[in-house]
Image (tube, one colour):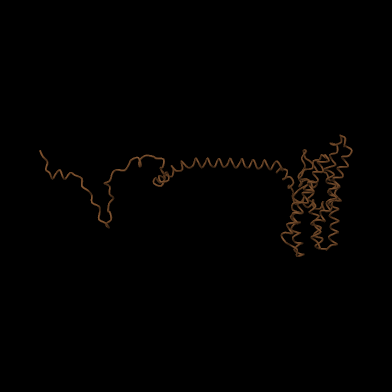
Length: 309
């Protein structure tokens, strides 16, 4: 049976007319083709986990932490291992030139030791026992032995000398940063030169002693105590007071250096008693000790004379 003609025409798809211009759409047009399922329901390499975390709320944050924490932990462990390796390398390099434990020994002082040491430096003539005491082949710390060398008094005396020099230059209206810097650098360079000459002399003359570089720096730095006393007397009593204080501090320092280095240098003669040059060893040691002591007044005068006028 033939179908009506108008029924057949009704089954044809109708074209949708575009909405008139200016009228807003009330509903979204869903009559288009279905979207591709590969772009929605399956994971692709470009999938954004951050977006998933924002949509999923707390569950998404947990997924994000699951992926982020292992890498952060690994980075922290790697950085910690690098820091430990760098610290070990720095400590190893420092230990090649100086021992931190030995440096601590020279700063093991207290107030009682400092007062007794200052009195010994200014009035060494009444002191009888100059021998450094040992405990199980280890020298006692300065706080337990006034004869032990230290680096605390030389360091503090050097800083005090710089401050006193700046005050003296300011009183005479000659202060300037350049002059103060020159004064500080000159005082430091003289100590370095003195220590290097002492080490070179002991090496060239093959004199074996237990003196270390820190010991020589300590004995060389004690001159700053006499320099402070000399400059103060010069500022208070003029040139006459300066020369009297210079003579007193120089003699006291020379006596202190001779008696201290005598126990360090001349005490090990028994170890060098054998050999072809054994008879010359005591003379050489005595010459080194006396030359070191005689050099102190020259440096004191050189570093303090320009501060007092």
